[in-house]
Image 1 (tube, rainbow, N blue to C red):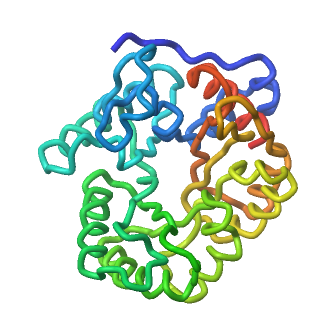
Image 2 (image 1 turned 45 degrees about the vertical axis):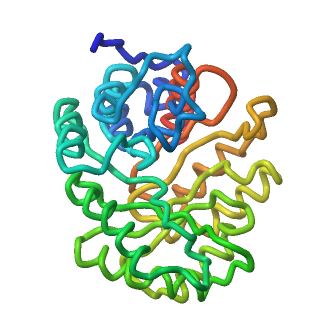
Length: 297
């Protein structure tokens, strides 16, 4: 793959203790990036509707090197939906791609459970089987965690989700994997919903992956309120974004400086996974988000 040297603006460098290269390197080591901003580059059965032919084709096994080449980022967050297969030989190719880029996997984002975790009639055997596949892949790739969407039919009863999750969380604990929840759906995955699920679970390996800007659609203030509730339960990862454009036309801005201040206040020491969801090409978008994150880190 052709190397593209990542550059930081003078503003970002100046914000890092007068441009001290060691400060910049230390902060940059905490950056990650997930595959969602580059969904137009992938062509997998579950995500084919997002494929954009104007972008080159990208595969999971190439994604770590892509991040290293374009951004100098060596922490990777994969969407399971961007995997072409869960077969051991394919996972081995992805693992080799991570090693080739001298990178590490920090999370698997969005392990779907058939039927949804709020489903009071969920097939427990099928749910655990689906979860085990990705928990075992997380172990194979060295990922410390996996994020599970809180989805399913209304009403969204946290006790039901916790009951369905309990065998999954127990298995994940035996494999050394944290089970995380993040604020993606404004109704099913609000801060009160997620915190109620965690309360019912009472599991030491369950926590949050807070997303800075997902709820800016309602308001920047609500997005910040959500972050304040969820950040104390985050250990290894959060999603750094400065807003969201859910329809691809209108951008709803997050109060990014305050979001970063919340993370600092709670002594968050994990990875900031860049999840550009703005308008335009994701490569300059991720570059700009990277500079902003380094500036306020």
